[in-house]
Length: 195
Length: 195
Image (cartoon, rainbow over all chains, first blue to last red; front, top):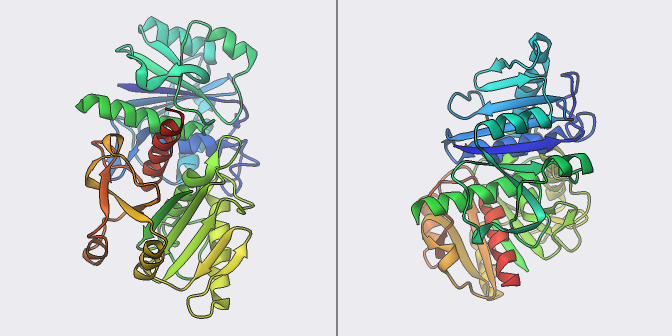
């Protein structure tokens, strides 16, 4: 299972946004949509062995589970519509319990600390994709790990503090979009599987 | 200069499409939009040393030139609006001459054969990204080359015939979206520049 965690700093906490203005009115939810596509979409199919956690403003977590994920297309607008349904479904959330909005998409009222606690309890090592990290290509990865990225904004000090024990890795000399990082990580792991 | 050529088999030849339905009514122009983003967009800026040729149904070529490209944002919808302006500007085309629609974006009435002829006359070696190719990571690249990809459809027999002399390279064991291929090529070239 490959796991990605994306921290969204401005993405909306309600479903009341227009699909016609994803970068503006919808708080750069376009970034998240591209991350979802990069995480799951192959040329003709879905990567089933992937799990993605989108952390909205440290308050909501939307989890996408490749094995059961349905209705995902590669374009931003239709992905945003799926996330909109997840945001709408949060009204049914009780405590930190997850609610399924559409097949393979779940929403819960939690923040990054609670998510990290869950991952740690599953013995998942956090790998923070960070410009100051060591090169991914030269690094032997833990068997059970989750790649954690920030959206279009830098990690804030509170996040850096929570992630102080994470392994920091870097993908190359350029500062890249989060979805491009996911694509590169997948390619590296795909190549390692055949070599 | 890094050059990418993307063959679009269904993308519209007119500007009369809705920005609200890029995958459907607009002939999968969403694929081209993501290719443009992957080609040019860094986390905070544009790759200026990039040139992209989008070949629409073997009849129109839209060229995007990083050095002078303006108004490009990473989301699909705004990129589609730029391509829409280019398609509209074709009405001003005379012969095979290019017309600039917005800064750094040019349209001309040409097909793949004419574009390949131009690239060959500039001593540019064509590299066809193809599942049956040799691994990119093990391959020394020609100094002057253009990476050529197909959109969501396979290369057709006429294209394969035109590309019979191209170097075929492969990026890994999975069949990937064209924009993901561009991201991986950029990362490989970025890493080669520092190693």
